[in-house]
Length: 142
Image 1 (cartoon, rainbow, N blue to C red):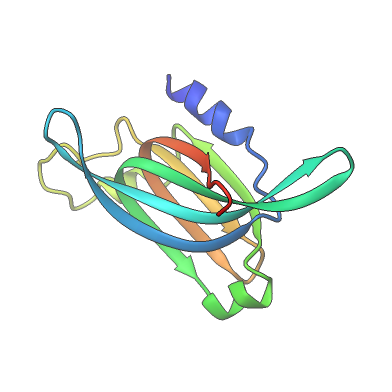
Image 2 (image 1 turned 180 degrees about the vertical axis):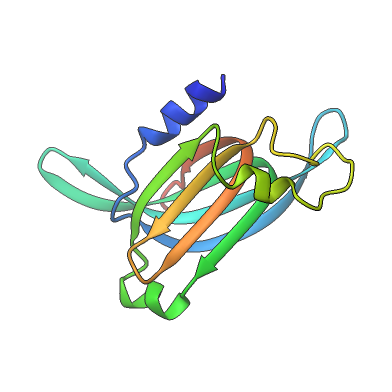
């Protein structure tokens, strides 16, 4: 299943879409467990019949274990908030770094987490999210 999740995510074209905002959101599952989600508000660039347009969307990373960011907000603004690339990996070099120093808990290591990397146009920086799943939802126009 993790491979299918990564393949699906890696098929989403986020290049030149815009990262508008980022927020953390606590959610309670049906069995009563608390999980943390990371939500990215986007201006998603869509191509259709020779034209391009931006549509509002939310990219939700579900059941997150870690979030690492190195963002240059002035650089992000200078590059019009544009995303350069997005990648999902089932195994990454950061797994051991995330697991270091954790106490015993359900998030004590990177097992079961996928590593999502959102890279902004330089010098905007990167967002690293360790989550179990993701969902892209278009926001209806108001």
